[in-house]
Length: 306
Image: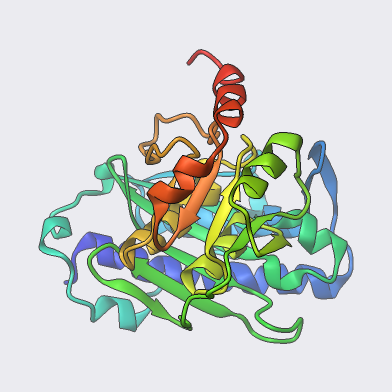
C-alpha cells in the first residue's frame, strides 16, 4: 500500500475535481446564493457546497487528519451530498520521499479553500481566476497540495488539476514557460490599499497584473507568466496559501511574508497572514529587500497580540 501522505494527496486530487464540478453546477444553476461575510468578502452556494464536499470526503477517508477550512458552516444533512472517495492513480505511482513514508494522520493538517476568488466568481468575466485549494502540511511545513482551476481558459472547459509534493515536483496539467524577462508583478484586483500599492511600486515593475485569488496569482508565478506575487496586506489566510506554497517549494520557488518569514501551517497557528504574502521563483531576497520599511512597520503595528 502506498504511504499515507501519497494516499491523502491522491484522494485530494479526486476531491478537488469533484468540488470543481460542484462549482460549475452552481454557476449553471444561476442562483449563486450570495451572502456577505464582510467588506469585499462574499460567500456563495458554490463555496458552501464545495467545502462540504471536500471536508466530508477527507474526514470520511482520514478521520484523524485535522482539516481547517475557510467557511464557518453549521452541520447539515447536505454535508455528505457531494462526498467522493477514490484515488488518482498517477499520484499513487509516484515514489514517496523517504522522509515522508512514515507520516501519521495525526501529524497532518489539511488547509482548504473551497473556492478561492469568490469575488471574481460573483463578478463574472474572471472565472479563470477561480481555484480550489487543498494544502497538506506535516507539522508546520507545507508538504503537498492540489490547485484545481474549474474554468480553465473558458467557462465551458472542464478545468485542470495541478498537484505536487516537496521532493516530487509539480505534475498534472502543468505548463511551465520560460519566465518573463519583464518584471511582472501579480497583485490584488479587489483588495488594494495604499501600503499594498506602495509595495508593488517599490519593485519598479514593468507590468502589474491585477488579478483575483491567491491560487491564481501563484499559478502565474509557477508557470512563468509573473515574476512575483506581492501583497502587502493582511488579506490572505493559511487556506489561501498552503497549497500554492507547497507547489512553489516543490519546484524550487519561494513563499514568505513581506519580511521574509516562512509560513507555518500546524493546526494551532493563526489563520491570518498578518504580514502579507510574497511569492517568486527566484531572487526572493531581492524582493524582500525592496519592501519599503514603512510598509513593514505598518503591518507589524497592526498585528494583534496572540
